[in-house]
Structures are given as C-alpha cells and as structure tokens.
Image 1 (cartoon, helix red, strand yellow):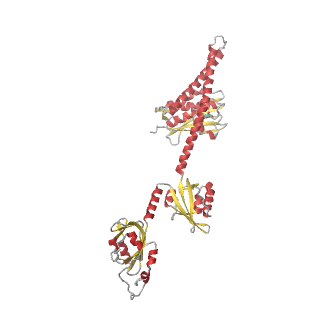
Image 2 (cartoon, rainbow, N blue to C red):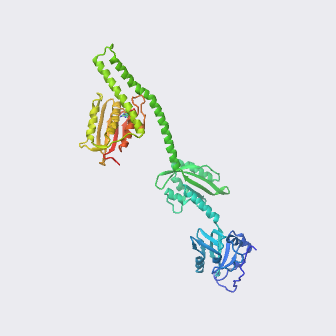
Length: 508
Ligand code: ADP
C-alpha cells in the first residue's frame, strides 16, 4: 500500500461552523494517488504532534517504522535547527493560532535510529482544528551543492548573476556589491545602471554580447570590460553568460558570471613592463658597449697623439702650442677619469655596495665650494651664478655623494649650454624640513617626452654627443639613497632646470 491512512477516526461530521472549527472534508478525501504523486513528504499530525497519516515519500525519507501511526512525531524523529529542537515550538505556535510556519534554512531531521539524517525544507500548516499538515522536501543535495558553490566562490572574485526578463533587472550575487562598493538595496541592477558604470570604450562590445544573448543567439565568449566601482576608480572584469530555455525564440533567463581580472591585469602589466625594461636595458647595454669603444678611444687617441707630439724632439713645438697640447691632454684625462669612475660607480650602485656616510654640513658653504670649482670652467659666453638664500641651513647628508650628484648636473649644464647662464643654488622648502638644490641652464633643453628616460642608464637624447649616458642615472640613485628625489623641468631651446629635493635630517 502506498498511502497509509490513519486508523483512528477523528472525523465529526456533526460539528459545523467555520473552516477552522470543522475538519476539512478534503483532508479525508485526498486520494492516495494524489499524495503519492506530489514530490513532498507529507505528514498529518494531531495538535499534540501525534502522527495520523504519512505518504510514501515521508516513510522513505524519514525511514519511519510501519507501525508509526499513533506515535508522537518527536518520539520518532528530531527536527532541529542550530542545535535547537523545532517541533515542540512549532506545534505550540500552530496551537496558538498561527496558520503556517516555514522551516528555517538548514533545518535538519534525524530519525531516532539515526538511519535517516537529512536537510529538509518545507512548512507546517494548520489544516483544520484538529490536524496539522507537515510538508517537507529532502534538500541534502541542494544544500551540499549550495555550500560547495559558496565555498568555492568565497575564495574567488567570481560573481554569478542572472537577468530577470520580466523585471528587466540583473540580479547579482550580494558579494559583488560588497566587493565593488556599489550600493543596491535588493542586489539588482538595471541594464541602464550597469551600462552607465561601464567604461565608455567597453560599452559597445558589452551591448553586442548582451543583445545576442537576449535574442536567443549563444554568445559563449568572455567579454572584458572596465567597471566604475563605488569609489569612482575603474577595475577590469570579464563577463560570460548563457541563457536558459527558450520560449518562442526568446530566452527564459540569461545567466552569467562576472569575474574581476584586475589582479591578472596588474601581473600582466608588471610583466610587460619588466620585459620591456629588460629588452630596453639589453639594447642600451649593446649601444653602450658599441659607444664605449668610441668614448674611450677618442680621448685616448688625443692623449697619446698630443703626448707623442710633446715628446718628439724633432717636432718644433712652440711653447704656446705646447701649453695647448698639455691642456688638451689634461682635459681628455679628466674625461677618461670621469668615464671610468662613472662605470665603477654604476657597478657598485648595481651591486649595492656603494656606502653612504651621513654627517651635517652647512649647505651654502658646500655650494660655494662647488661654484668655485666650476666657475673658471665655463666658456666666455656662459656665466655661472651662485644663488643662495640669506640664511644658510645645516644639511645631514653624505657630502661626497651629494657633490658627485651635483657634479654630474653641472657637467651636463656646461656640456649642453653654449651661451647664457648656469645657476647653482638652493632654497628652503615650504615644509621647512627639506631643501631644493637646483642647477639650471639656458642650454638646448630636453623634449618633455624624454624627461623620464634621461634618468635611465646609458640613455642619451642625442647619441652622437659625448657622454656615456650614466651621469643622471647615478645622480638619481644617489639622491634617492640620500632620501630625496630629483626632478627636471625643461623646454627645448630655452634651457633645463634639475632640482634635488633633500630632507634636512636623515630619515631613519
Ligand atoms: P651623459 O653622460 O651622456 O650626459 P647623462 O645621464 O648625464 O648622460 O644625461 C643623459 C642625457 O640627458 C644626455 O645625453 C642629454 O641628452 C640629456 N641631458 C642631461 N642634462 C642635460 C642638460 N642640462 N641640457 C640638455 N640635455 C641634458
């Protein structure tokens, strides 16, 4: 027998009155076939929780003994949620007049013999004055799948959504709103709201993909897009969707996921930058080596040639010529020395063995000393000026390294300025805690797009001009190790100004 009706006859056809006060005759005429057909476990209980009737599904799911009728349900199974027994409380509420109570999520039922243990969803209804209907569904599979999905999603930035064709809204995983800091009371967004948040350049591709899906044509490709977050910044995502069912050519529902790909984009960008840098570094190193032979040979040839001339007893060299040759030899020796020390410095910078010894120095005094060294090196058409504020400051720094950085700037200023002036000086920054030391010139200037590149190793704006392209790179590294920054402002044809911004006191 598939349906096991109660043996007890509790019907009282004489008792009239309201639906509530009378037994609903339908409860007795419900056919066995009907009870068997519905995909629910059905239990009919008396007000005090005695089992009157159960369908096959209930017997099977709860593993009820055949002689269960007439027993209290609480003696056969425990129904609980968060460790609390539900049945007595629900029966009490129904007896107090509540018509219907839904089981809370994650309600668990366990048979006394522990053979049946399952999650159920369902509700209890007051059927008539004497009977309560308890309908439930085994949701173990659903709860498990739901839990597994939630667990998997919680460690990702993937957000499922579906498009409700009736409400014309995207219903999105609540985590999405938490993550993007976009506010929505009901975790939904209209297509217009979503489109407004897309980066203008990505709207067309997204509209195309969505239109295809809504027309019932599968569009299985991921669509990358940038979304404006609650905070106003854009983040990269990737969306993918499909549709469920079709009614007269129109999908019943479009479902999809969107996934933040920002972390991948960041890695991709970092890798691309690193690769570009490595490639560029490689190119620059090759250019450097090719250049080096020229940079070293030219001064060496000059030194050897003029030395030979001076040493040649047969050559009649006037004393004025001899002085000129000696000056040329000295100049080329200086150049070679700078070149060699730049290369050595670069190698100690790159291997991290350049040492810094900090002590306190009066800055005006230091700049005056540097000024004296360069003043007589300028050409006739270029004048070097020292611009100092009325009050000197004490600067905690490695004075040798700072001199080296300024030397590089001054050598460049001299090299690239044919006429006009070069200014060396400093001013105290507004914060009173740092100084700006500047070297400005009225030389040929630097195109703005080269501002960053000139600080790279081996980089020269014009490859044919003498120099190894190391001075500014060394200057930048030194300044940063002194706790400061170096910046450039320049206009082609007008001049350049390099500024070192250094803290007065060493930052620990
Ligand atoms: P180099 O030793 O070749 O001068 P740097 O690293 O010192 O190398 O400078 C790199 C490039 O920056 C130079 O080749 C030059 O093109 C440009 N540059 C640097 N300083 C100046 C300046 N004061 N005026 C114009 N161009 C400059």
